[in-house]
Length: 205
Image 1 (spheres, helix red, strand yellow):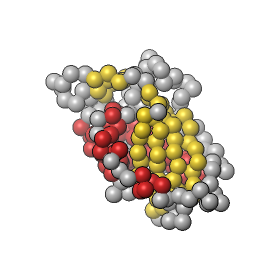
Image 2: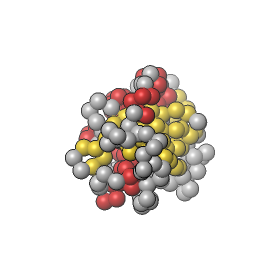
Image 3: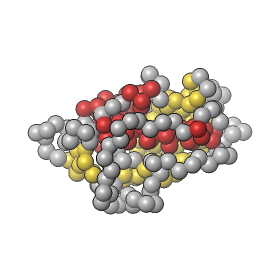
């Protein structure tokens, strides 16, 4: 769901790119795609649901947040990609329900992009009529995950959404967003034995 990234995105574009790029160095021996390809997740549906058209039969919001898949456990690069796909599922769940607890639990407390997104969908979501249509984010590609000297992993992903409508309040005029693709620049940090989202920045392609 990218409406938050179109309206409060001005906040995110002010984030220094150094926060994200400091997590990685091109000389890292683990640069590039992870060795382990994660299993398909519910966020990875770009082939079954084209980004250029809304879903004809949108599913009802889930009653419980997605659970972290086994592939996302650990601190390998393969686990980093699996975690990112899982994180997109958490974002979609939050946008559907307004429940941001699981999303924030998988984020660093200081992640500005994460907090901005959570604050927006807590107020504007499918459950309260604020969002409708094909708003769910779909991961089309995750590329160049790199582990840096700080222990964090940095990289980017291509995200697609379809046509969806948002209303910031029950009386506000609906805003129709057209299908689009975004580059999501991300940084993950280790927390215990697993990855969490350290920072994220969306830019329209």
